[in-house]
Image (cartoon, rainbow, N blue to C red; front, side, top):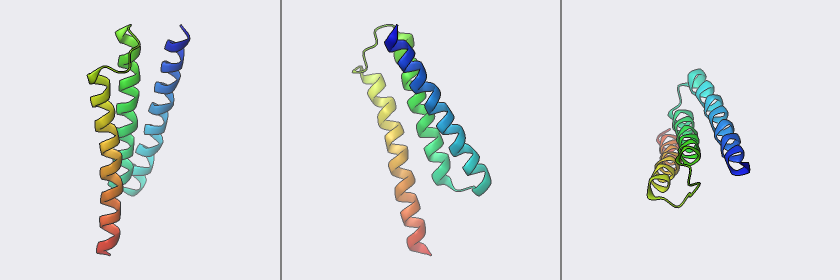
Length: 88
């Protein structure tokens, strides 16, 4: 029970963080914020899927793959931002 509540709380916090980044993206149209919003939503999806799976095992390949994509988006956002500043 406690693990499910924690997973739900983490998922809700990740969704809210994604919404904040989406708001910043809408204001600036900077891809950096869009990539971060997508990464946080993928993290929330991962937590929801873990909770729905019933096993509460985070070491399944599917969950690692989702997180790998999310962290990859963050890395792409940072690299893209640094490349954009070098061009200026």
